[in-house]
Length: 129
Image (cartoon, helix red, strand yellow):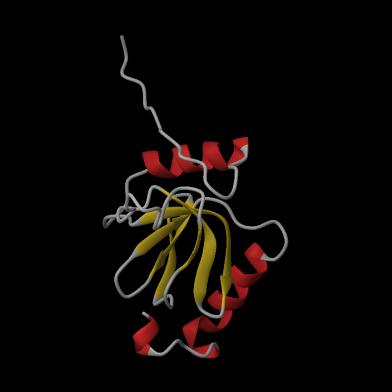
């Protein structure tokens, strides 16, 4: 019998759509050049940061920090590139795979960031990163 992949999901503040779950499974099944910190769905690039609903964060804690279904705002994105079928946002200490973009404005934020990079945004002070 073939081994099956099983994902345990703890829903807190946002429900994942079937499309989100399918994209998370595909993203998690793909190999990446470097370790992944977490997967984001319903993501948008705002002010050089990735904002979205987190899944599978490696630093999730029992008290709910970085728990599945919670909204996450990354620190400033240092690089954004495509690996396979997914975009990967790299910050100073983390790598986030963007599984899905927000319907209204998600891809527009991506295009804006790619056009000018982080240079066109005001970056956060180091104390926030």
